[in-house]
Amino acid sequence: MLAFMLLPIAACLILALIHAYLGLHVLTRGVIFVDLALAQLAALGALVGYALGWPFHTMGSYFFSLGFTLLGALFFALSRYRHMRVPHEGIIGIVYAVAAAVAILILNFIPAEAEHLKHMLVGNLLYVDQGEVIKLAIMYGCVGLIHYLFRRPFWAVSRDDAPIPYARAWDFLFYATFGVVVTSSVEIAGVLLVFAYLIIPSVCAFLFSDRLKKQVLIAWGVGVSASAMGVLMSIRFDLPTGPAIICTLGVMVGLAGLFSLKRAA
Image (cartoon, rainbow, N blue to C red; front, side, top):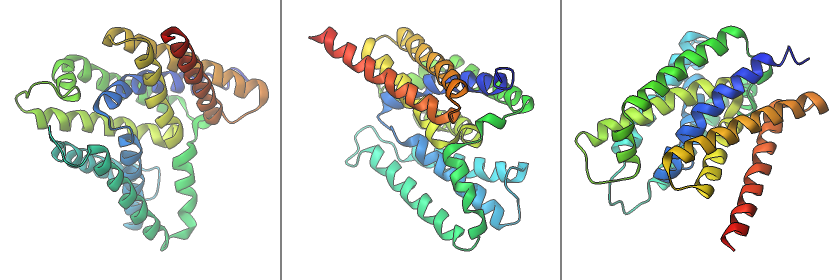
């Protein structure tokens, strides 16, 4: 059984590392639900591709998902200003709601494919194969390299520091790389686990440190340890892997919150 879980474990570790880091950007920007919005746009793109003749889980379907996600990334970059009367989170919420509504309308004409939206929620983590794990490692390694090389402008935009040259271009590049990660992750792990990986390790990091390097290490530690414990729980008690990891992350952030309150007191 443990040998069977090696590929899902590897996929979980890759997902935890990239999403824990991106989650620090998301919390700093205050756009908590951007992951859900981009994931919903990816699902909408897949549905539009299917309606136009491209079956799910094909290259054509993937590029439709990615195209819709990149359009969302462009919109989020162009709609963000330093002094906004409407919080950016509100705009992101509108995009999510409209994309979900359009997806439901499309499903009205292809009801047999409603199961696809369920798959987008819970993923298919146990059946990931070696090729998918290698593809994830290469793709996310490239995204990580981009974020390392351009970390200064990315963080300047996320922290809303003094205006920098080509701020909107950097903003779009951030959302574009983020969208690539979300589009690929949701196909494997589902929206719920991807959202948990993105937010919970970062919240734990914010509770214990104000320094970026420490925050990254804490977020990585929480994501990796929760993945390992969640997978072991799913093996030991025959539980669904994704929900087991999410519950483990929930327990960890609860304990982190209690410890933080005790330390403050």
